[in-house]
Length: 159
Image 1 (tube, rainbow, N blue to C red):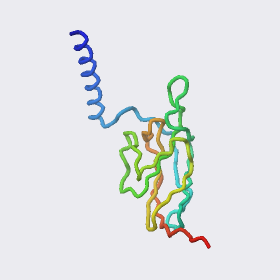
Image 2: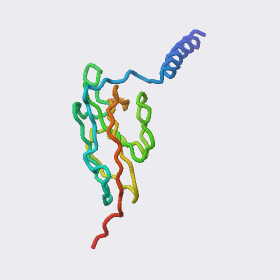
Image 3: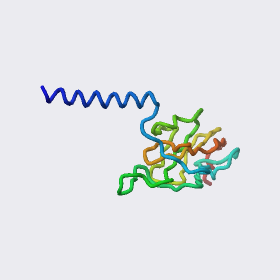
Image 4: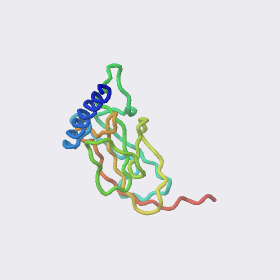
């Protein structure tokens, strides 16, 4: 009987803590970002027409890039670091207090990448960066780029 009751008590305590976190709409404490930290899309430029595939170059000021999940020997993440997440054709920002979930429209660069090549279909597209901590949660305050709009033309045909 003790083998059953103890796990039930532990489970109820954990569930209670999780429920409180959900009420607070956060999973874990957010990592602070330094004052003046900025993330930006260097290429392509806002409003430009580009031929696919599209090279996207990320910029960052006031912080450093570090792979996701990396922690120091003391178990803490390196201060003022994170990695990029690229939003493609999104209407609004995802919740900044929860881990950013990868999808076709939210691309993770957890390896510390600072650029990528996108195969976007022809037409108009929006791009925006969110810089997040080792656990894929946006810093506090969030470090988010301006949203840019580009137009993609068909790939140039080889002669």
